[in-house]
Length: 467
Image (cartoon, rainbow, N blue to C red; front, side):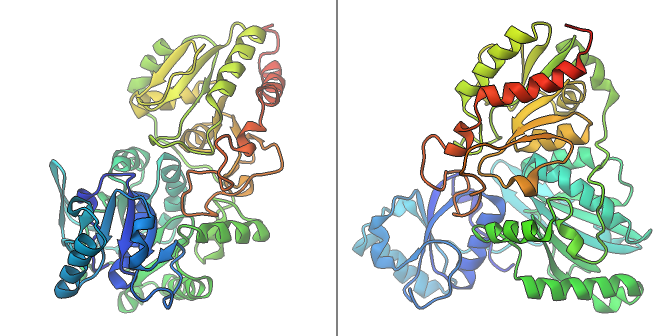
């Protein structure tokens, strides 16, 4: 990567235009998609429509006035051309100066300055140690980090010499990964992915992981020490070339369709690549026993957990309606009076009326035990489902836009209703209903009665002799 998207000049979740569909614009678009940092409304370029489709709405600069946006990012490397564009935007198209971001930034080698703090790589990187040095770049949320833990389990099996640096984005997930990987002796560093390594970093190979896997680079000469791994890496490169680049944006919907045809899901999708043979999704999530007593004091007696939200302050089509959650809670109290309802989630999540306890914004170690000791967890597809399932707690998972065949755990109670669903990533804005419905049909078709029926059948068996 040659050009760094101006993250620190743009507010997270802003609506942006990118001016330029060349090398700089494509790198900016890739970084925004990978991090889900902002919503790209459109990419404009003077050569439109005679340019390749980038999987996002595209237009000519003269039509900028049609769009509502918070920032316009000029993605042109040439200084003179960039200044001309700046003048045109301000004087001819009347774009306010404070909305135009036109400075070109380059990734630093070992340090990246972000608002209010500096991030340093502390200690040796994997390629500065003996063994087989590997870099893995991961991004996403809590649930993605759970899945990557399982993939790393598989990668560690490749060699007793393997030494892995894990580059994480967003930075809020670094601490999560450090906790999840605390039991993995072959993990060397867990680093903010804004701390870019120098171009001459001597990793034997480097992966970018998302819903699919991309081989970024490899060192043939170094890998001759490991002939089997070299063969695997060469084949992975070939498979990447056949399937295209790492799936981002609307391309993910194609990936989901491919996986459904192949009969694979989130954990087994990597099995198309040599070296990956994941048959069992389970991975060990380390627990800190110091927090067990705290969790017991918070939530004593039989209880179930429920989540309303998904980790960002943006309305998300996949979230089950608040009024449905609250109606379900009342039904639970009416039928299972001794079972408490505990709401878990982030500190900024809205409270659901009727819950007996609110565990919102608590330390992850406490949340692990709360989930582990729960009778069952109720949620839309998301991070807490991944975590609870790996901790051995069964979940009722409500699926709408999210593809059920790709994301559902076989041991959970997975519910889908209605005729419209699985539209996730058919458009670049993953948060909205594809049909533009304020009340997405897929989630509103899952009535509280449907969920309560499934819950009652489970609890009645689990609580035999209690009622």
